[in-house]
Amino acid sequence: METKKNISFLEFRDFFFPLGCFSIHQVKIWNAQFDRNNLSRWEKQGKIIRLRQGYYTFPALKAEGDAPFYFANKLYDPSYISLESALAFYGMIPEGVIQITSVTARKTKSFHNPFGNFIYRSVKPELMFGYTREKSSHSNNWSMLLAVPEKALLDFLYLNPQYDSTKDMQDLRLDIDFMQDDLDVERLDEYVMQFRSKVLETRVLRLKGAYL
Image (tube, rainbow, N blue to C red; front, side, top):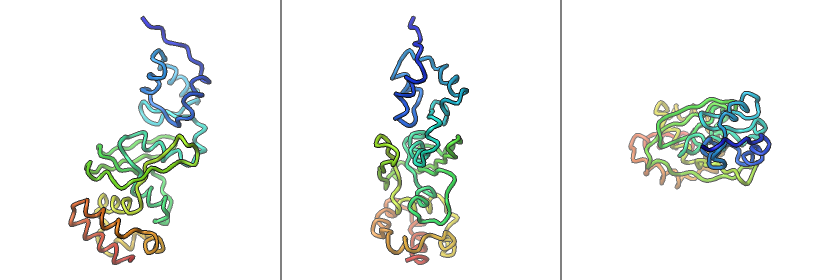
């Protein structure tokens, strides 16, 4: 019978801190004899933070602004940041967003932890496109999958059908300078065809009428 190895927290932290967040599975790969009771004890002592069942991080990372976006991809894979979070990231909507919103090919899900509320909206697997990998300002080891502006906008309209009329589009208060100067209309048109939704195409025409 294998004996569980007594590992110091400093040894553990030195290895996992650069990863940002980690799973129990990763810990077991690192050391098959690791006693997972350590995680419960360290969590109670405030040395680590549980992000969701089986996923953890370190309290020091609460000071890193990129951390929630980085964690969002890790907590529920495959997913990419989109919807309100991406629109706010690009400065397309006026207000800040408290929730971290993502799109996934899995079922709709949400998690709450000290880093925020993580919301995942479900789309068909064939709609998992139109995102890029962005480097974090915190670490070269971190990167985040983030919808490009045009896809974030289409994801939002697709998953929020209550925005339908031209007035509804105006009520979104999208940044007019971004819409007229920075939005890639050709990409928007190319992407909307991939949704294969006449209803969405009509909404996009109304969006254009409101801003372009």
